[in-house]
Image 1 (tube, rainbow, N blue to C red):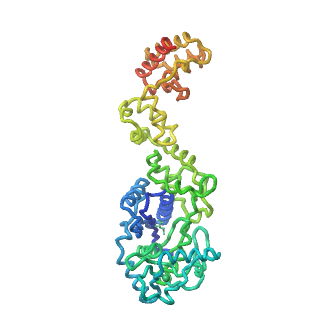
Image 2: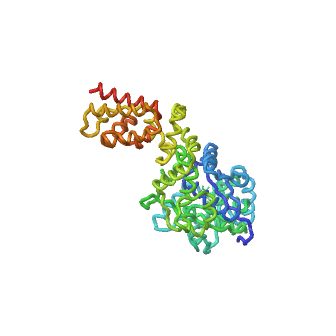
Image 3: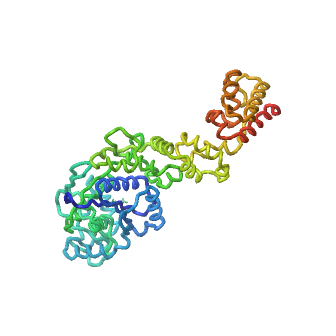
Length: 464
Ligand code: GLU
Ligand code: ZN
């Protein structure tokens, strides 16, 4: 049990059998929040006991994802694949003490038995055959723990008291052989050796917890405290699809989300501060975080919320910083039009949900848009009239006086707002929806604006 002044130590223990999933990243964040709020240590561990499915490439991706989020291990990262001797030592001890035994049953036999029990409406569990009468002529297939009949209790920091009846669990498999421990066994050893005080992980691991407690008990090692985080649900309240849950965290980076926004968003999946705040930095969240305030019920993943949070972070960012981030998402020629790019960032930044949106939102500023002549016409306005108005605007821009905008406003008062602003907007943007025309003028600057207006005048003159 954790004493009051014992250092808090938590871990995230991803298996490198795929890229870093959103759910794992969120679990990592809650561990980090807990550690930081308790002045403790946060540790990353790579759980690669499954040698066939574990890949170095995934390990690298997982660590890259954490790094992107700014989640770092306070201590050297350990890999289970490098710790075979440690597990073996514990396995031998258990076998010698007759607390564990070899099981000779094949996978097929076990599956068949499981099917049979299910068909009888029973909870499947191993029947203990190889403990009582081990066959002589077979190779061992597994190492099993002798599980005593008892009620296993633990206090979950989020959900309170949880109980399991070990008779429903049976003798659990803890290793394939002396060199190959299975998850539940390796994790108990590592949590112990790394002096983990709190195991904070997803609710899907609740069924593993009693098994791990049984292993701790036979090894006579202390039980850490447990906290199981609520499931992540889709906006309809259903289980998130596997496809979504397994979305690689790095794909959010590719889509143009900011790591600070991801952290803010993830922290709010299952947790809320006391006050009604939505934008909080990691530091602020740490100050207010408490595991007891994590909700029990499923927590909703809401994409619109993520976009909103992301847009708030983009707004708060300086133009220079936003510009640097945006550059990674656009053709490099755009950024080379330095003045327009700078003004575009400053003006459009406010409207972006994610950095990658800039490409679509700003496209018309860098690539002269195609449009049809009739788009230039405001309602029933005569072509000749529009041409004349555009020529007058052109003249105002050419004069290049500091009261350019006032002159255009005056013109609009004289000729009608639609008659003036509409063709100007279309001439400058080629679109029906755009930032206000006067803003477009200042983003594009004199030269580019004039050339676009001239083009529009030509269209009105020549095209059918
Ligand atoms: N390797 C396990 C997983 O990725 C870790 C579970 C745990 O935190 O104990 O789900
Ligand atoms: Zn057996």
